[in-house]
Amino acid sequence: MTRTKKTGLKARGGRVAVVGALGLASVTLAAVPAFAKGSVDITAPHTANVGKTFTVTAHGDDDAASYLQICLEGRSAGKAWHRVTCGAVVDTGTEAKATAHVKATQRGILEYRAIVYGLTSPNDHHPVRERTSGPVKVNVR
Image (cartoon, helix red, strand yellow):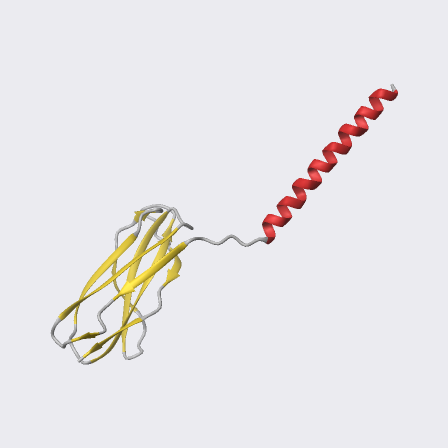
């Protein structure tokens, strides 16, 4: 009978140690932030001539969502951003791409930026903004 009690105490003490170690590990993991990997790049010419067409391209990726889509937004004279075009929805691990052919209609500075959206399915109607590029400027003369 003494032997049973000692074995029972040893087993219970071992279980307490394992549960305590798991609890400590879960608290440690919760305290460390998780970072998603990804990037977004946009290219456009520095200058363009009035009446000519120029190309703005963007590509990006992010591993935080199941599906990705990249969109280009533009603005002129500090007005609100408006959507120019969006690329196709792609699986995570595939680079999302978008290309816009823009005709410069008047002189001034045009700004463009790229936004990577994360989607839960290819037909998701509520995409989540994952990454936004810095604006690039095109001087139209």
